[in-house]
Image (cartoon, rainbow, N blue to C red; front, side, top):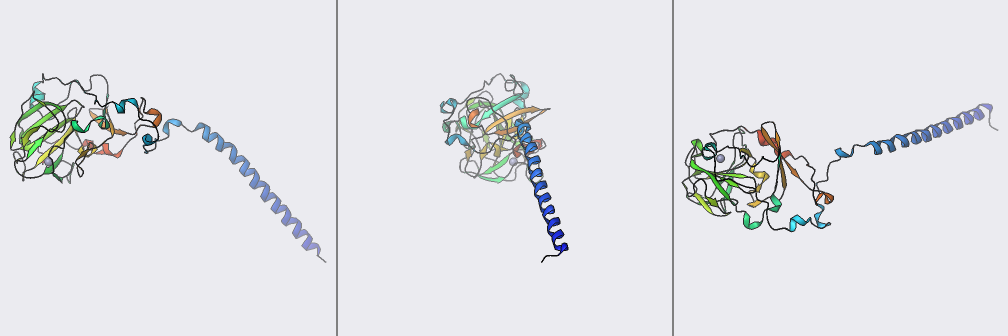
Length: 286
Ligand SMILES: [Zn+2]
């Protein structure tokens, strides 16, 4: 026989279990409502694009099958500054707005050449003291330097620590700089092709060994050449790069188009690559 105490204990326990279950059920029910609301009110513009290329599933946009790279206009009527300074603004480049788009994937193989074939990277961009405005590439003394892309020579002369230097303005919106040359073969206004010999490697200016100091500039500002080139493979990257005016400087973002965006519009996705852009400008490059 159960005592009165045992009966009341069972009664209290069952009330306790019932109320616990009830509160659990109501909590879940309450949770369901705001959770649905949060899905509805989620700001869709802040959803990052996945860094996955779906182009293997979806058909390519019509432009990608077009073998012609978009070419920008270049004047041969350079200003005194353009003919005499390594860093010079391109008056036509940003004429139509604050943003320019350079789609490296649209540059055909025959329109690109590694500037010093067979060279090894001996010093990276920025470097230990953050003052290195380009990369140093080395093969041997008096080796042939070639133009990376088609373009027009903007500057060719001795220039401070750069020594004998050449700046080529390209139709794709970039400028490339070739420095410490033993000898320059081209002069301002010359039209050059990708792979065309333009100079021989040397150690003119401030250089301790025969090498090519190579820079990539957009509207006068130098950028990390690793954004554009793979220096181990000596190939061109295939990113689509967006350069946007940010104060007096340009900021760069690499974009990966979503399948539904392949037909036209793009949404920028930030990369960490634009952090190095503020590297100090120095005439005394290494
Ligand atoms: Zn250097």
